[in-house]
Length: 201
Image 1 (tube, rainbow, N blue to C red):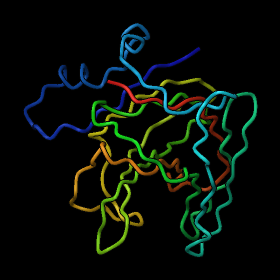
Image 2 (cartoon, one colour):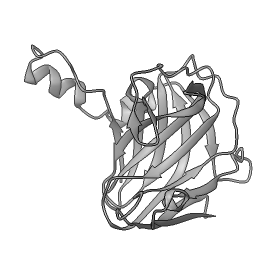
Image 3 (cartoon, one colour):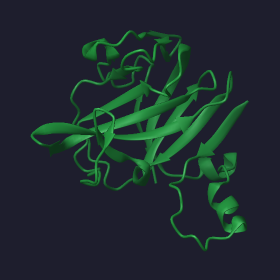
Image 4 (cartoon, one colour):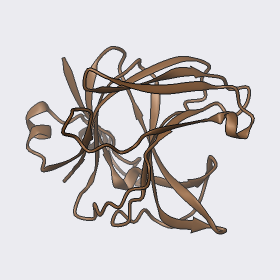
């Protein structure tokens, strides 16, 4: 079974009614999701673009987490073990990209995972104190369920080494890198199968 889910930013309007909130946060139906205009960015078939994924775990900052990936059966399998006695994260990242997604609304990932929360990351040419910053958006998974998850660009918040920044806003016309993190501040094994990545509008 495939589950279609959309993650919306939290509302700041205190007067928003519970009914309206429920409508905003409701998952897209399969038919609604299928009607969205999408752009295939990468998959793991023979004719799909190769983003040159590589591993970066928290050992770069003295952590003890382990993680890696393998590509098999037209899926990227990201797995390992997180240890919060240190950095507490494992990640995979693409080689440098040059993507203009300014005409799109967000990123859609198709995954089958373990019920843990994951983070999709985007990097542009934006700097903070002379260093590249990242834009992160979390998404939840259901154990052993294939899910199509839409992550709006407005959900991506700027941060540097895990610390949230006030800005700048994400420039979707200058996307230079994607990343996928297991960083839910929980110890233990993890496994996520990434099937495809698309932009949607």
